[in-house]
Length: 146
Ligand SMILES: Nc1nc2c([nH]c(=O)n2[C@H]2C[C@H](O)[C@@H](COP(=O)(O)OP(=O)(O)OP(=O)(O)O)O2)c(=O)[nH]1
Image (cartoon, rainbow, N blue to C red; front, side, top):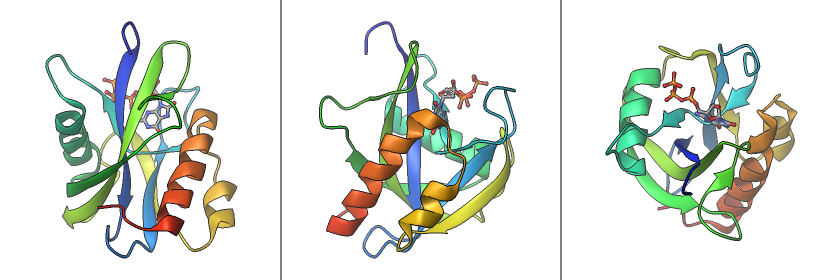
């Protein structure tokens, strides 16, 4: 990922052992992303690991703490390309503490039922996220997110 901005994203589920719902967030800014749904998370700060960035972002953005599960990886490499300048690594995460609220960068949150992929795909996602949504739904169907 040399030269690319590193972004960490979380596929927050209600339970890693028996996931039924996925928490997704609607961006409020910047203008080109406002109104689109995404995985909560954000850019790594200097010296931070992906995991550290995720814990920080989830607390700042949603007021929650989580336990991280396995990574949702693409077929090649570990990062999902987002655009010409950024790539994102995504982990499953189980909500541990806090009631998720859109504190920063988002104006709505939604728990999407994982048993109904049409409902997940019906949301206007940031287009770059769609392959990630597809991959994570496959992972959920095959179990073992912990
Ligand atoms: N968090 C997140 N960002 C995504 C997703 N999909 C996607 O293309 N992006 C893009 C949008 C942004 O260009 C970049 C992440 O930026 P961000 O605005 O979330 O990062 P940040 O919280 O650290 O914010 P800032 O410091 O730039 O204000 O990645 C996604 O699912 N989640």
